[in-house]
Length: 424
Image (tube, rainbow, N blue to C red; front, side, top):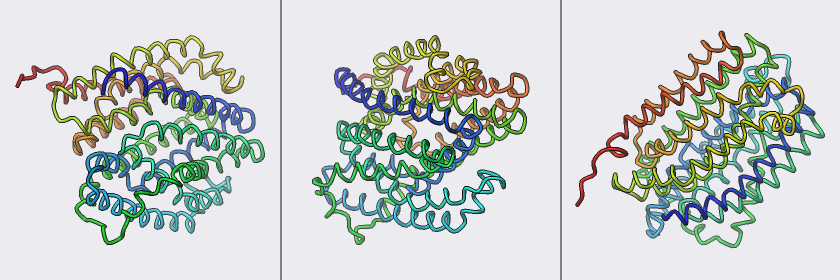
């Protein structure tokens, strides 16, 4: 793809992301006003749990769907096997998980919210909503595999509008309970938008047949499932452990401040992360030479990263205004966390762009080993630096972690990115 197409896609994607960030601002403001820092810490725990459960419901094969739909989109027979296999696997896993969560909600509640909080019904709401989330994600993965970028972005825009309105209403009416209900259900409700968008595009439905279930594709999906589920377990778990360490050593309010910084980070990172998943993965799937891989990486670096870097600088100097607008006076100490978070996020994006090759080319063990290295560094450096610098220590650890991770990624892809390429 040319620079022109990448810039055009980035511009269209930016419209969706601006809306998502604005929606995030409104949501965070409502949480700050109606829930507070302590409630935000509880929301963070539930969000980690939900993200892991959602990955398990899809078996982590979304990226595999994108890859194989992109690879076989002109082969009707193979495409039928891909769709039938993926949807049946997702249906079985989601039903099992939903049943377990629904009937063991009280036990899960004790783990997530401790004994003083009776939020078992939140877990049950999530269990009922989960199948709709899984189906929505599979449909979007299929559309992405067909490189229908504009369609996905439009779905994101309308879905964001619906999700924001529902979230704000729930927080306004139910405060902490409302925020938790929103985390548990809103992403599933977005299936309505996707369904309305494809209601007249049912050409793929006849291809979905139980008899076309193919164990060959179960094996092919296996590497993607392993990579995604590993991250789905380990990354939220490490975030949970760090948050718990902050709660135990600094307090629930301190954990809420750290969670607030993570939320802000999530919003500005959307500009790049959504573009990476939308463009980089399908593109890396298609290319098969070191020359093309190098070209795509440095093309993204030259086109998008300078804009991203300037944006981070602007965010740093406007951090106090952002906190005032986005949160409330209670969250003023978050300003001290921005520098290290921004530095870490910049390096994170540089590394993630290259590391997507692990997923595109099913480099399973490279992915597992580098992710394991990353989370180990993050956890132990966080614990060590929190003891020295307080909450800020976790953000310094975030920066150190991605510096080391990026070095490892560059060493792995040193030949592809910097080595001499033989001319044919």
